[in-house]
Image (cartoon, rainbow, N blue to C red; front, side):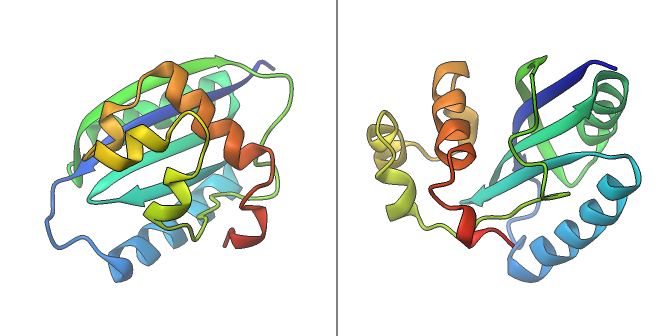
Length: 145
């Protein structure tokens, strides 16, 4: 089994996507991910998503195909798909950290991005890895739900 992580970004197709819809999405994802041994985390800001999925390659590739076809979001952009030595979010079938824009702007190397960018889609591979490292290293682990 080859363990990989997939990082992707997308934008909600619904301008009304809010806390209730996000909670329902997280609940559904957590049940499905537990069934397939997928872990990861999700960020949501200004109608855009940043998600990390971890698991065996065939499962993650199939899941990404399914996600890409989901009409609840658009502009699904795979930023990274690569092998990993171990899971960064192994305790969460889908962690959702309670962070603010101010918290995100304090991440070294990303403060300029969150001060001006309007969507996670504007992240490149380097900044995506910086964002991943900030969460993986535990800065907001206590705020995960």
